[in-house]
Length: 112
Image (tube, rainbow, N blue to C red; front, top):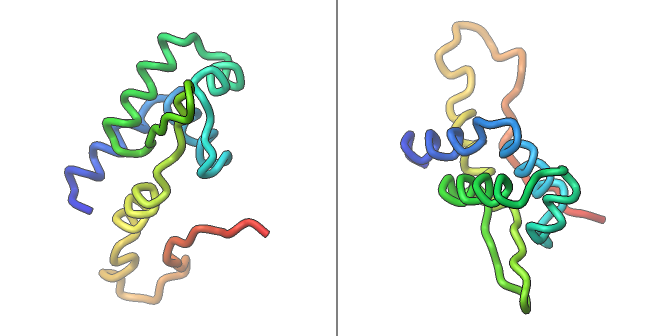
């Protein structure tokens, strides 16, 4: 990931409502939610939610898929993991002592 890509993604998350929407979609997993479901769960007006979803899409953090007559938004987990890897790349590499806090590689947990 390039710095410009990271800035775009971080900028998309730099609002309380967008961060809340993104975290909801991460918790939901690949199934995602329709805009109506998101609006209901987060008590957001439809026009406001539409704006925030557009910003998250511009940051490439969410994807949208048409399923029948409905749109389903879901978190882009590969992009999220690439951002986390970018942020933790070379963790503690310039320190003079060992790293007290390990920066483990990012992994996606599988559901049982």
